[in-house]
Length: 389
Image (cartoon, rainbow, N blue to C red; front, side, top):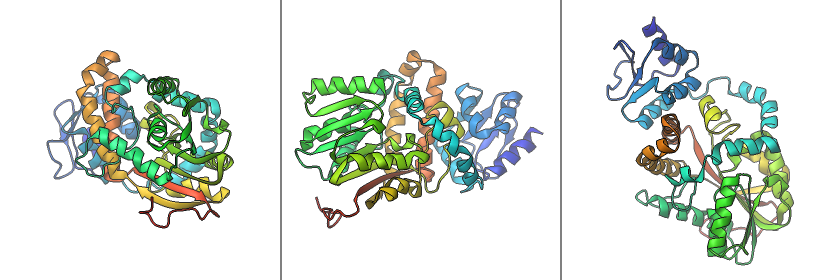
């Protein structure tokens, strides 16, 4: 019976070339599955839970050591993602049914709770495997051989070049993380920055760094929701925040941007995305990013169209994020013993799965990374070509 049920589950997810090994040594796999990548299921209860809800339970059972993996975890997950049907046929239904719930889940207070769940995990934890500037977003690799530290600086320069920053301008940043981009813009481009974030841990780190680097007069780190932003600015930038906003609030975000940008203002939004609208997988939504939703480009247009913004440029950095995740996963594995001392083995396995799964998703094309540059539709002060400074 176990063989029949597992075979049916494999068929339902496209028969990836993955071999299952049961507690009694029984091996179950599609024809031609490589033996070097195997999933070990340790008891009948684990199998029944996995069969009942594979998308949620695989991660929970792996974290609890009731499932083990032989071989490269990211490689295994990439095989699964590539085998999955492109569209499960119920995406639109899920999106419609979830819209009302999402609106409530991303209220001002709920947004704070969701951000604290992930980003207030502890600066010491993230410091074990991020780069020295604590940048937790996709890096930019002009060459694949570039190291992570240089690639994160290259990403910030890539963003600044697209924004065409000029000395003396005012910039607003929504969702500033640990403050690296705001400080980079101020130091290297002579702008003043108001940077918004609702993570206490990140704000404390950013303010301390601004003080130590003598940039307090140029960069104001504001512990508040971006929806409360006021004033007029020459440029708007958001790197890695849109995933937490929720598509049902994109028009609200557009109105905020419209209200703070000057007549000749321009902006850039950098976000994980999808090729078509669908929900985040159940395990990641529950255990890593509550209420997160990587948008499709069609969903992102709800930010720009109602307010009359023109999209000037769209770039997809999907493989750059895969390369970033390769670095993060390698660094995380090197620090796994320290993470276990800091928390426990369950946290190690949870975050290993999250990083490996993200790497697999970008490699397989399940996730995208969009940078969208925009300006007011009647503004002719825009670059003549992509090569223009």
